[in-house]
Image (tube, rainbow, N blue to C red; front, side, top):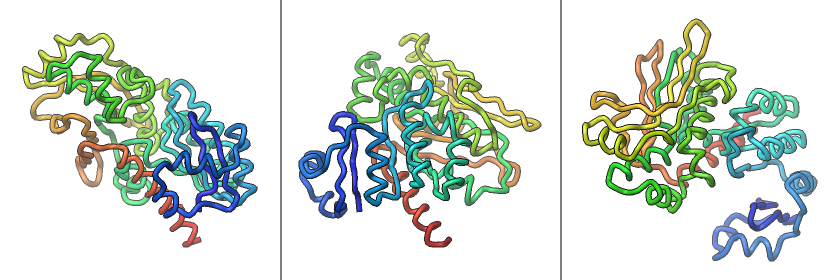
Length: 310
């Protein structure tokens, strides 16, 4: 049962008796339905605390990215974990800045903290590292992780202006609230931090990822590179050498023979260099918000299965 929904535009509401998921799904206007029937709460902290008092056991945190410090999402998650609630988030900021702290907090309160959708939506990279590739020995990865930058570059290559390309990315719902968080490489840098820490056993912070965005590349350079068969893309790269991890995000020309070359439009791709299995590549073709939602659902299923097994 769902006992509370909060949004930036509509505010926070609780429903002490809970809402049947089927009833909510069949509502023509979900938010209006909930705000009419729900009890308003003044802020996020009260929403979490009162939700817990009304029987909530899990928080799904999906607020807007703040790439500079992960707030206020970071404090929302801290509040929920301290209240002994499981937490699922698709927000990269808190994980990139405070994953170790948040996982320790979850462990202390005997709950789970999961974040599959923070990188490549529903593609199970975090679960692969935790459950499937534990002993494979990942040495490095190269990836196209930011769908907005890839889509904007693709549209510019087709003759669109930068403003038109950004507007279309926003219409698709893939761009951050501030699209320059994508184009300046912030989104990719946070994702690179998360993957470095989870795939390469690092302890990086976002400031340790060298970041160069697209701001200084002209439309002529972008179109010229594409017409020459080597399109420009915002590439994430990280490697571990003698337990030292280096990571960067920067625009690179992608050669025809490069596996990253197959990604067009909003497609994301990552190649892992491993000790036991050589090169492994994962491709997420043209993801939408549905894939992000699936990643959240998969985290929920993982939490419920582990609760059942314990």
